[in-house]
Length: 184
Length: 305
Image (tube, rainbow over all chains, first blue to last red; front, side):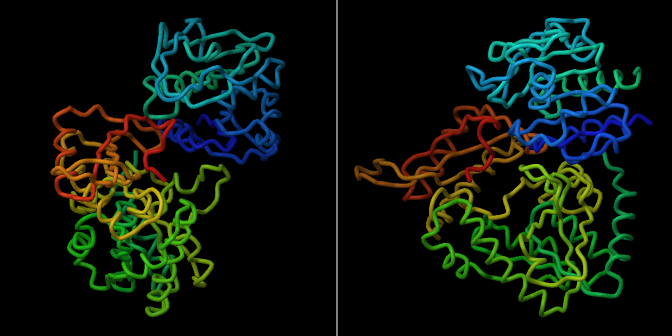
């Protein structure tokens, strides 16, 4: 059975990420952010959302675990920051309904949602500059970089919350991530 | 989703094994989580379970009578009438966190009295999975009756629905044949109407909030909201029968949601909104104004405090 763990960066929706995975029959668990990566045996890792880049425990080390990593909201910002991109405050807070345009329909994580998808978001910060080696995969009026991928490294991120019920094609994003983990 | 029949069998067996021949108590709020936990526990250990319902004066209209009827099959049910004690404690308390704290303490005192009386060794709680993940993160045990286990030295705490989500608890409630009013019941916050009164909680404001909630629930039934209520949010000027009134402002809120984590303010027909306004201002002479809250969650929360 495929096992995907959720590293809890103190997000209010962390348990819904676990639920989305559980509901599609994946073996899953929520891990404390300070869990040493060496102790983790998984086919994939989700980095949850959260309130503060200073409270992410050992999240950065998980990028070197050599399994696919899916960062959600703060989780995506952690990936960007760790790999040399830039994170900063957005001009306009992204809350509730956002229309997201998929700009790379070949992307294994969000490409299947092209041409656009309606999502729920909740963030003040955002990724301002992509790290080297990453592809910009989605955008919106309120946030330039809504999603990014580095297929070679197996690192993926979305700024919105695919785990909440109001995101229309959230399950599909998780299904795509499960497929990425299973083919890895 | 949860396989309800298997779940019920396993939960009942688990409670029976955990409690053994001892006595247990559960705080029954009338909400779906504690109702399901109490029904499972009653099935497991019968009258060795004492369900305790505390009427804080901050309950919904008809709630106490409803609980009395729905759970009349539990001979051990205790209904504690503590309205006056709660309003006394709440006098002059304005800060939302302090309000929650005061109510939590009052609740512990009432509950502790009964727990000692019936010689309870075990505490059963209707904690559900999301309760265990606090908004601050860190997976830790969440005490529905905040702090009670620190006051009463229980031998153990049993949480039969701890791995379920709200919608799954409702499925179990249906499978347990709990009346519609319980299984389909809207979530109601632990501190009750206190969080639907911004600022100090007085019997007058609580009463306005109670009547407003009742009107809103009745009028919006067909919209099938996850939660719908009225909250007293301040004072404003109005004019009634040629007299100026400085009366309460009631905010009406109605949201749809799967799990309460995100919510969408519902689009309500104008005539329905007007009927709500008319009933609330007409039936409550001290209400000057009714407004409708259009904010989703995020950025707002569902409740006001």
